[in-house]
Image (tube, helix red, strand yellow):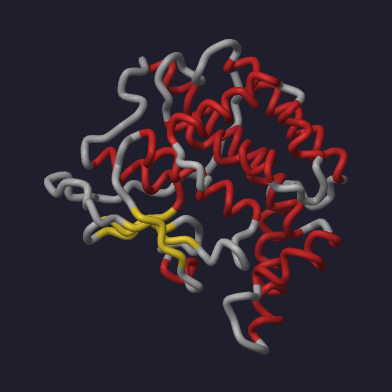
Length: 260
């Protein structure tokens, strides 16, 4: 079992008396011109959770999605009077409304779930940040254009540089900036092996019913398989574990429309 840890957002005091708003909106950047690979993984993970939990929402594209976010991270969910961000914030809000995917787990399994979610955030999340911002080819040919797409000149040129500095500082704190691409691939492969061993022959990571972990993992793996950045190596690493590929296919078929 992994022992990685990740910072989680603080608990928010939600009003549990109000039901889930039927007109809830999942707010994302313009997908065709703005969304970056790690943002795509986060958005898909949140959509997977909402779809599995059968919570209604509509996807709304906004150029200023990150500015709407309480912590400038994606995706953003507007549900009634509340605006939350990232999968963790959405999960907390759903729990306050009496909706949870992991209620049936015992204490030991819940500890495992948190550990695996931390592992995925720390390794796969950091890897996607690394290739998006620390790989010069990806940055110059992809990242800077999308990161600046929401702005007019001169912010169009300034903001990608500003965000890059911030992300690289974060990666440096985690000791990721000095790693080579091959070292990052090795970290990803080790993480995927742990996930594959945990999944085994099961449909989901904790048996017959999906949890928040399944939503999170789907977001990352589906994105890695379908987005060839910086090359197809990330997707190929996932494909080395046929059960993980089968898992992605199963989640997509069961909980997503053909538009995904």
